[in-house]
Length: 323
Image (tube, rainbow, N blue to C red; front, side):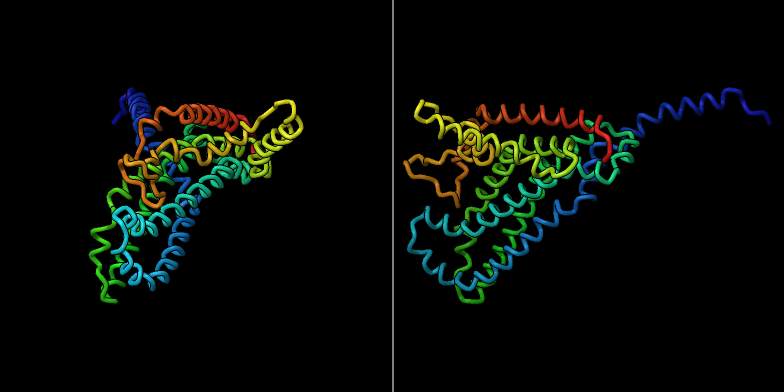
């Protein structure tokens, strides 16, 4: 039986038609992010370890919980909320700090590591663009870590609440105080908002670290930290030398400090309607200043710098050779 002459062309045409669909099904961005999680287990192991250590310390501190609950009745309404929320806020602050450190050190090694072990030759052979590769790495500190941190904090706080309840029930205390007095919903909404704000505010920091990771041949930490420190030192020396001439400059140092910690005053209103100052251990939902944050020039200038740094990182990944 003879084979039709058009069989091969049809097969070739069908394979070409299916190729775009196959590429689309592989979802390069999704699998690139999965790859980062597979290769960098510290992204979730480090926060888990810190959460476990904090939970152990909190379990030991529960010895004083019945005594603290007895003092609870003598406090005012605002102080009661702060007292109950304090250990949960400390857990959130600690894990948010760990997430920032994990994200920073991940970015420093993200592009440098694949050039150092020459695995970049393999990854470049795959149908994944340099832009997708760099953006997938940027998504780790900007999207993945905040989401993981939020879930981990909520789980940790739930375990803390259950442990506290058990201790109070065993000691004859009033466990209902925790469930009725703890502003749980407000705490979690403020936590989710805070983690989102922090990720956006720190975006230029992560992008700068990725850029250094793609450029430096060694000592990425020094190359990332020394230039800002040297500029700050030069600015400080110039200030002392020319102070008598009316030269006052600490703009760069203030800029660095603002980029690290300036998100808080932009994202929240720390003055209550009655004039009282908000306690950092519990920030009511009513004090969220979303409009103020979105209209902050520092946010949009920082995002513009982040976009520029990422564009340069993409170019470096395309042009730099393995070490």
